[in-house]
Picture 1 (cartoon, one colour):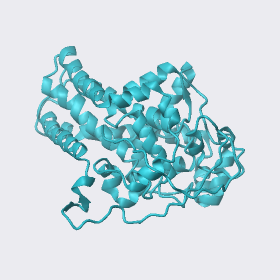
Picture 2 (tube, one colour):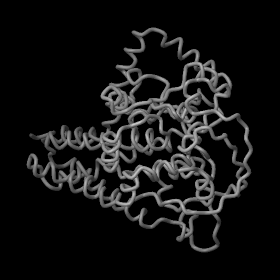
Picture 3 (cartoon, one colour):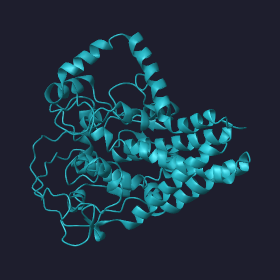
Picture 4 (cartoon, one colour):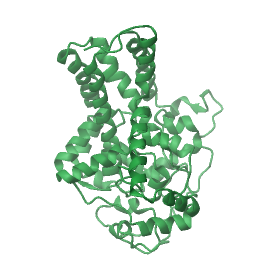
Length: 420
């Protein structure tokens, strides 16, 4: 669903060893004197952590897609468009618009709202914690129970499955904002946000993606099984189950249950998560590494459950928190989730770069003055706690934006706001 598998293609690249071999754990503990931020590429090969870093020189036509003299749609030939994805996205978004209007005009039961919020959290944690931080970056280890829970949660997201996400995300990091990046933000906001789902992958994505090692993903039976059955599982859990629980559980209207818990919830969560690829690659500051496209985006932080410190993440991709700060300092529910799992014994080996490594890389690649001023402003624990409380209040308020217009309309028109 959403993302087609990479094809087997011949890869011809120029390799040159620019760095001394360094184990991943040394980098995360702050002993890599180079402060290299490509540690996740070594981790992809779980058979040997001591492989060399490589630099891949891509010689390619910078035109993103071949030009055609025939009929095109927005510059793409008909054969370049993934029509099943386009039709599905048009269908689900049309349903979402209809559903949003329906939910604005008709009452929604109290427990249906909370059921939709719960499923939204399922999808968000499944992608952010599972597909992203666990399987794409291996930033922590999870026991069988947590892996099962994360796969179950991710299935509610309509995001294509943990395997496909992790595979494409590794390619995204290795070749960020180039033709080898499946979500290349240089092709425009729409393409980075959702357009990349609608067209076939650039040849460089297939060619360079085939160079990366995904054997660890193939060795995970659970996500391989999810990959094979993703769309039927999504329909069963995220549509059928999501609708029937309110209908039978507390006698919700069937159409209300369908629109609030299945359709609108799914579309809103997908767009929240996609802001990481679009907003956080275009607008924002780059204090950790000024030489790359990803940025620090508070809006994305609020919408994506803690994925908005994106300049930091692309500089330190193996950090399980995706952020320099602790979860109580910024709105980062996904990091809180992992920390709780660690306390319960479900998650272990949480990776985090040392302050020395962060400071060293910022000094060479980032904006030291911005970074130092920020630290001075937050030097007291009282200030950090107070700011964290404000961040969480703001994050919760922003993440719930979708419920405000229907509520306002019902208040103005004197309609029942919510029923029990």
